[in-house]
Length: 173
Image (tube, rainbow, N blue to C red):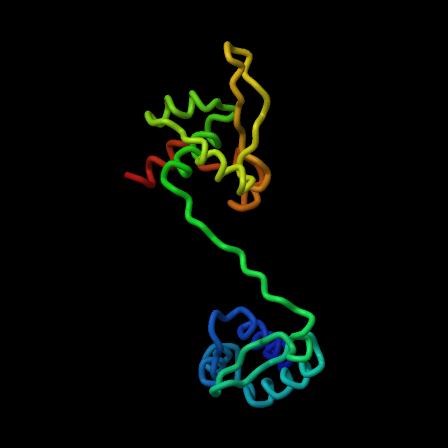
């Protein structure tokens, strides 16, 4: 590893770290790739980033990247609330994903419990399920399938990438 690669490595370590890193930690991680001057690497990174959208900050002898202070007036922080799925919603989602297209009555039969409107609403709001037409039976109930957001959220290319039922059983047992 040459100096340029070492600098990239340190940059990626600081960037991807959950918490700011000190020189000792950075040196230890870099040591297995050779002997490099961590001071020089950090000085160069600080110089490289001084006029950019993010800057390298040293605080309490630890290093991290932060949005450039001169951009503060242009940026607003938006937080996204996360909410946990209820057990009913998780069960309903699993049934829909493995048995799609499926009606609410079929979901209830598999679960052995009623499916409340709020459960389907929560999954619709997340865009993890969507209606898929109506079943050609009396009452013409709506059928449900998973939506593309479900695939994206769980990192699936297609619904066929879901683990098979027997694979899940082996994990649970």
